Amino acid sequence: MTLWDRGAQHERTTLAWSRTILSIIVAGLLCARFAPTTAGALLAAAVVCGAAALHLRRARVQQRRRGHSLRAGEPVADPGSVLLATGVTLLLATLGVVFALGD
Amino acid sequence: MTASDPPDPAASGRWTDRLLAEGTDPDPRFTLANERTFLAWIRTALAMIAGGIGLALSGQLLAAPLRHGLAAGFSVVGALIAALAFRRWLRTERALRRAETLPLPTLAPIISYGLAVTSVALVAAVLATR
Image 1: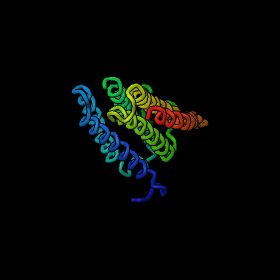
Image 2: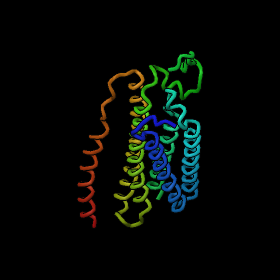
Image 3: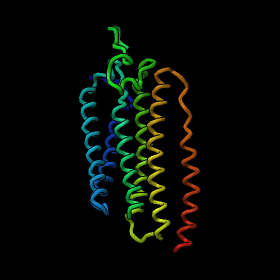
């Protein structure tokens, strides 16, 4: 396998995705544990599920892409994952507002 | 772009492909760097939201009206950062595809000034209600 990029961009991007998604999952789990209401706990569970789905999606992208797309010059942008990450983060923010005002 | 007649993403394909229909595929390294920048903004948003949620669940750490307002404020700012991060990712990706100048980072200085002012105000509020 030839090295397409000596800057290890692909690896750094994968790690950035991992730590971002892991942060969301941890935040969601903590919220599910400490939510003052059942509705809040369910919302937190939705955040965790969304982040887990995002992790699965990223794993699939990585597998499909492994050394193939990048060398072939195919597009690497993944708007679906970016949108899902934004959505899950917005859901977590909603949870924060619900906790702040419902408490 | 390959020689074998690529399908037109604007006509066919999923709706996510239509977001980036114009221009040509840029150097993958730039796309990946853009993605990492987006993720860094998302983590910034997460930090704000985590601060808000932590404050909301903190019990009697701060007096009630200040606590509720701050917790909601942090969460809303976090949501704003996440939404603007997506907007910026899309604008940058489109600029890359059209080989145009990248959009200016307008959010970064606002966040810096905002955080500085807010932290000073917070210290004053905490000391006043202590």
